[in-house]
Image (cartoon, rainbow, N blue to C red; front, top):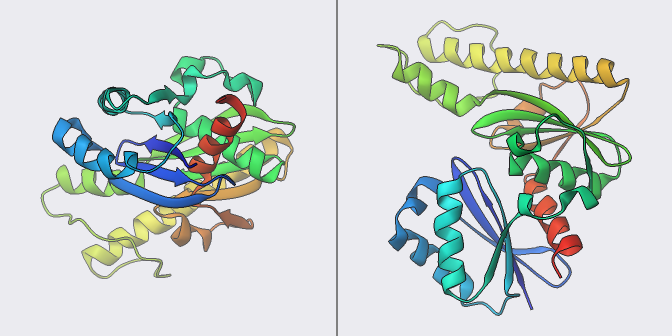
Amino acid sequence: MKYIIGDIGNTLTKICLIDNNFKISKEFSIESKKLLKKNNVIKFLDPILKQTINKKIIFSSVVPNVYKIISNAIKHKKYYCYEIKKLPLKKMIKINIDNYRQLGSDRIANAIGAYYSFKQSSLIIDFGTATTFDIVKSPGIYEGGVITPGLKLSIINLNKFTAALPIFKLKSNAKVYGKNTKDALNAGFLWGYQGLINNIIKKLSIKFKTNFKIILTGGYAKIFSKFIDKKTTIDRHITIKGIMHIHKKLIK
């Protein structure tokens, strides 16, 4: 028997097949915007739902419209569908924030994934559509975090609202400045975000008087792991691991 879990993000939707030992056996992904068309949803889901799987499927979702379309398609196939924030997550982790309704499902999945994987105070930096910093303190307390503009979105918007600045692919070269436009942009984004990340880590470490385990995930994790002052761990599946732990603990 296999299990299905999924993560619906602003940019990408990922669905994973999980084996009996709660390890990822296969993953499928698609641009989230494509799933606003019903035909694309059916094409995406059909090969996955043909597997021999548990009838209870759970998702982390920050895109309600896409989740609604996917959940309706899954229910039509006679499966049960859950969004993680509809489950009693407070049984797994204490959530110490002002407004639970405003907390993104991906961020709480990251927090649960980090705490249940490492069992120590952690700071999860997720390089997604936004770059987010989520704080988990031992013994399992989610303390909130920091949200900054995502790198890719910032690059696209700079191109969109300027006449001459191009889209470019960020490189981990060590040039302090550029003698052409792309090198100048690369220097600005690389060193600007390096400063932003290290400054936020420093301020949070001082505030909580904690030497956090730093976990990086998302598209730019590998690049920035080289430029962070503290030791880091890259875990591209930390969100999925969080959803797996939720399934294991809360779905009967």
